[in-house]
Length: 317
Image 1 (cartoon, rainbow, N blue to C red):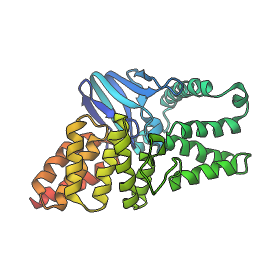
Image 2: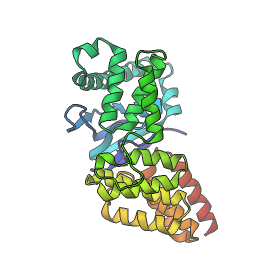
Image 3: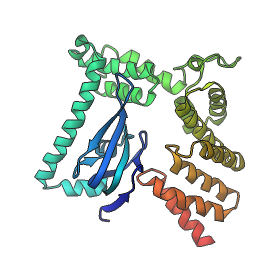
Image 4: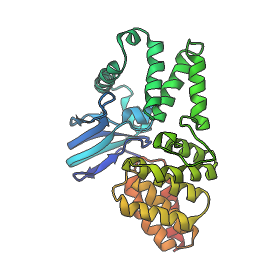
């Protein structure tokens, strides 16, 4: 397959922060911004992509989730590469390799400026301590995915390091859901006493659906942050889907879309609506939701599943 050209209208989203991807993009024409939060201030920052510049490279090549949202600011055209296509293009193309090094250098300078403000001069002179403190910083600020990444990186670089035992304990606490204090005999008293949405998502991954259901229900009663609540409600719909309760899952996802029509995981929500309608035997609605989901799932891990399900259903209608 050859790289494909995709046209976007203003205010479109190419990918959201937290999305996984195996696609790499280059801006052919138009204007695209990368939105992310400054680590120090927590304020939203936007970097503009120059025409001819690649983006989304780190997530695709490193198998990470995106740490920024790519927003289309005016009518734009983007060339989308798979990882294989991109790697093939790089072979023997020294000019392109140099261009990519420039892109990475710009990104690294941005990260360095942010991290430098988080660490004291003592930490900057001690990379082992600095990496440990980065993990601790993300842990304190409840960004557990980044905390896990930092701690795992520490284990690779410093397997017998001074903080190895603390890193192992921190990683185990994530897996066991003990970042937050909890009391199984009473309702949480504050947001800091709740099981986090991230922990609940880990419960779902491990098949511990009842624990996830309990944690999400409790969290939603107390959450005042709309972004956190919308993610909790998405995870609740996913949990109900995994529990094979299609009617309840459909009700949850439908309510979520009505209240958050621009939900960052709209594509995934539409896919799971289709999946649950298919379970109920309503193929017409399932196909309708799949067709709406497909354009929003480009580069997402669910994209192929959606395509396969759509092909299967259209063959049977």
